[in-house]
Length: 360
Picture 1 (cartoon, rainbow, N blue to C red):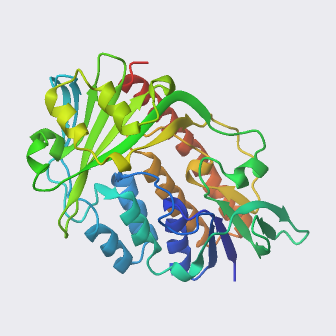
Picture 2 (picture 1 turned 90 degrees about the horizontal axis):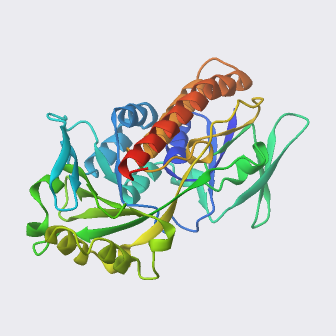
């Protein structure tokens, strides 16, 4: 039986593990974080038609139902505003069926993707490198000591991928010179009336005259009370102070009072920064028993909300090839022929969209 090792228990790695486990493949996932809840990696994620198709392809029906039932209420609007909430652009998406997922809370989504494969995932194990044996099998090494061996290693270990660093030395995402500060305002009886009606319908981008912008998007869970309004400030590094919540408040101090009020009610402990990066297109390498998935190969900015969807597509494509009649080298090569151009086309579109949003 083919044995597949996956470095990283992020969204793409777990979707791949689900599909392979469902298909009878021996799969082991190794994640450096000690627990699923160790690092705050984000809040609301947009799931598009491609992401929905990938989830249907990867997940057993019961897990797909769980992920859908714990997702957010579907929105129907994407809109852009000026800092005084004058609307510049709006696109409506009416009639999204309840069977489709349009947004998820990242942590809730990840817990759903772990369902049924918990015994395949080992937390607190950091893959630092690998060696390809004469037999063609891959032996991985852990920072904590020990090794494991499989027929294929999939680097799904994100922006700082150790697997990528060995497979493609010197290739990594570049800093785009922007930072995003994420936070959230809990939705409760006191804060509910503060949210402008259009902000509650989907994703709203507010562009400031000072060259920054803030995105707002709700997560209202389908089958349980509560939720939150995500807040995402895009700015430059020099504008970020030690108090992240204070940075967002200061950046929007001259904006419409409704925006200032929302941000003021944000949970001050929920704010964290990320560096916005993007990978440059790279020529295909010689396919072998090591490959990459998601941010490990095609890191992209959050503009357009396509990063998670692209990782899910990678997982579905790779699983389909591995579960086909092709031999392992042929399956990996077929996957990379699709994944590489698709991923880098998406990166370039995302970078262009970020430039438009940030006025660059």
